[in-house]
Length: 106
Image (tube, rainbow, N blue to C red; front, side, top):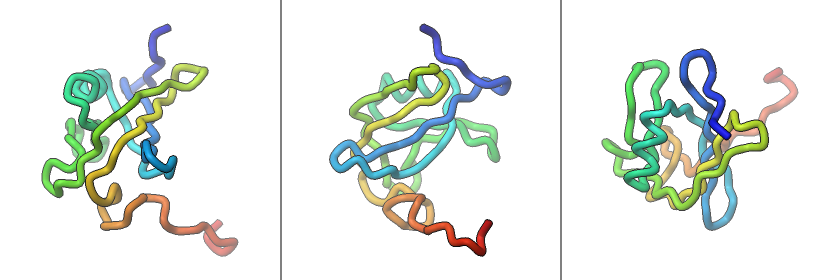
């Protein structure tokens, strides 16, 4: 079945460490970034703020070597299982999900 992209031509992507299952980050892909990811074995995404393709780690060196790409049962979310070369988060944290949500944050 074909993937279901949103009205902007994007699909949400969850990136998980292929070794230990830790969720590393969330991003968006379009058809071109998915194609580049499949062809290169490196994670490519679509930057909504910059409106351009970006190769994860192109400037920082913190790339994601993609081992597997899975789709959910509704065909509208992707899961990348990857081997990170350094922190996944732009803050330098291993995962973008390093902060716990407190009651005061809601």
